[in-house]
Image (cartoon, rainbow, N blue to C red):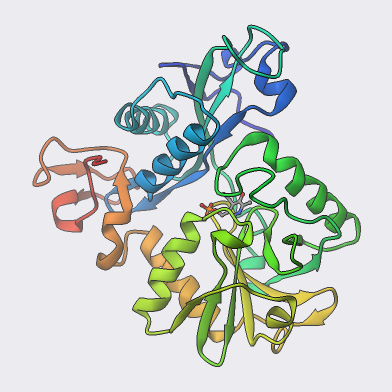
Length: 338
Ligand code: PMP
């Protein structure tokens, strides 16, 4: 998919045309991957486009920057406002939103010293990463020969640009061998995560996923799914997962902003459970999509409306063209709290 170059990008405080949102070849971030980023989704809801778990994403963005000693020159509120302006200006009903903060051009000494800290946010409509059909059919994965770096080597809980070479090499190798995705093990040989997803398994009606001690990024979809599974009365165990836990599971699935909730049906040619999407995965998926679509009152505070009203009681225009909707009635947030 090529990007639509007629769209707008928010860069260092301004909305600018897509083609002007460029950086210099000498930028530190390009050479050393010295940047942090986020990926969030804006979904169509009855009250208009709304960003899912934006505050959690910005919290992680700031934590990633702090981990690498980068001082973000904007507040969370300013960045939230930038996301809303960007989505509105581009006229998106739903899209993927990518904020990035990186060291710009000043010197190529490894220590960034005086390199400017630059921030950009752009967005585009993006289908589920592993394919919309795979959300029903499930994906076939392989255990990668490439190991996930340990948090003593690089902080796995930070979402930093250079860290993704580990994901890329694992994914390239998996796809080269005909698989949809790679699962990376940690340095102890336990499951870490997919190249861009967390892993869940289901066995005997219980749901399990691993933790930050297992070299994973603490996914926001993971967090949402843990809550959804608990609300559906499934016991959720947070523990180290071994390869045999995955192979003997009744069901398994990936979670991630880009891939959402995607069943895993085979690992290196061995079926997980019956080899099709399982009933627990399907129930959790359905609840997740109801939450992102603003159809589940319980999770309305996970959504931030892009078109805000000055008062929660005032109506907002529906961008779906189906009439008017009231943020007050729908209960979807229209303010950004910390
Ligand atoms: N692990 C990795 C390595 C990822 O890149 C992602 C995607 N951000 C995830 C897990 C899932 O995180 P989230 O649910 O916050 O998108």
